[in-house]
Length: 186
Image 1: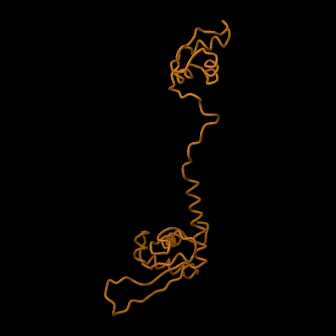
Image 2: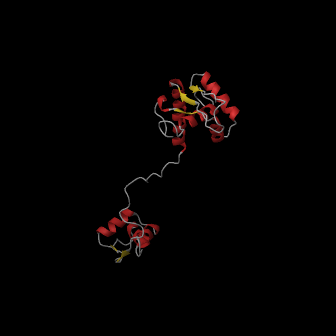
Image 3: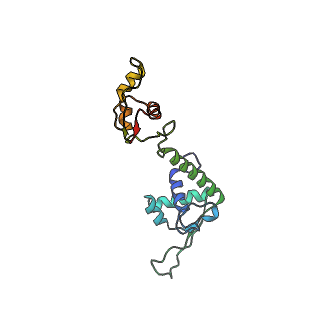
């Protein structure tokens, strides 16, 4: 990573940034004030495939760097077992800036690695689809012995535009033959 965050630190901050209990309800935050959620380290650990001790170490280093604020609420002995921890964690301005820089870099990488849509071939779209029928070929009207006479002989009799092209004709040839009444579209 190019930022001041390790991969694991970014992963934890990203999990915190997208927590469903933030003001953005899990969406990408736009300010450090959007990030303030419950500090449920066991859930963070499970979501990231880490141990609770690893998450604790990451929280400590991120707090020491000034990237996170943590409000640790100690459980009272009088509280009933199983009640949720009320500790919270939030991004500082510096933490949001570090997280956002890495988040934007990761999004840009995803964009660059995403498959590109197929680009259109150059030139105008064909006027007639390849399955369009051709009818009414006239006897070869070209000058006997000319190259155009030979070309006409190759493609005359084609029953579709696709067959015409496959037999050696071009779309320009087809436009010429249609304009001069040597063939008609079905």
